[in-house]
Length: 423
Image (tube, rainbow, N blue to C red; front, side, top):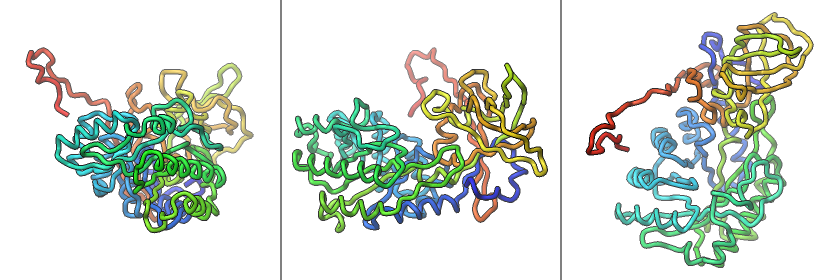
């Protein structure tokens, strides 16, 4: 989206507003699908962006849905995904959430421990259904090239491969739950064909080794994803040339029947599919000097974008600016870029090289279609959330806004405890 012109009528939108370009979303999907073997399937990880129009578009493009919460499941079902094709993941699951998911028709769950299998079996027996499980694996060592390691270290994600090898019976079938394969998600935001192939090669080899030790007949192999993409900076999606051929070669060596669906092989993506479709438009509220440093304060801060950045979990964000037509252009100076929240945490950058700006000018932050609004500190200090608008064929197709901080208060003085809201 960073190189695309803003849609007609954008200047009539109230800021802040997120724009999601569905044409760019389609192009990202086409690019990723071309980089994966045609026999494989692709899950969309709703955590990246659960906007209903984004989720619906990816369903129409052929993605499956990977969810890890009741809210994401509800969004997926409302977008038209079939419950039987949903993969429900997450390192810990409330029993009531499992009950609700099974009642909705979900049949496949990723579990991270023997307790996860037992818990799923309890729910399946109560509801008199049969369920399938993927055993999520935390491999012995991380694959090279990862930016955010999710395996090979002490983690809530997955069962250590050594644990599964030492006690294979604990990961076997239950009365109403059958393990049908393995789930290995080894890292996030991985850039480069070789780094991606390294993690997929290691994941497939580990799955083959565990299948032999446990006797689990692998019908489904989820190799994860981690496909990297730019975040809040100008840039394009990294090329994935040759990735499909490399994946085919490594699968031929570990699961020779995969081309005929033995096992079915899947990948996951959220960031690569959605990152470049999103742009945040927000305005400058104040401009000043402090201790010799230029400071600008925006309508948006870590409550609208980069909440994880505010908690020092992601690199600081340096926004690109879109000037008014005919506006001034001066030499860049080091500038503090902050949001409106009453906390020093609300700082996007301490020394962004920016030209002079004035209150009211528009700031465009590109490539925020993934981990944007829904990954921010949206409830902190109670500011309104940005609107969200979808764009297709250069025009705005819908505008919506999520309202937060509305509470339902019930009477806790009743002795029968019926005041506790039903789930």
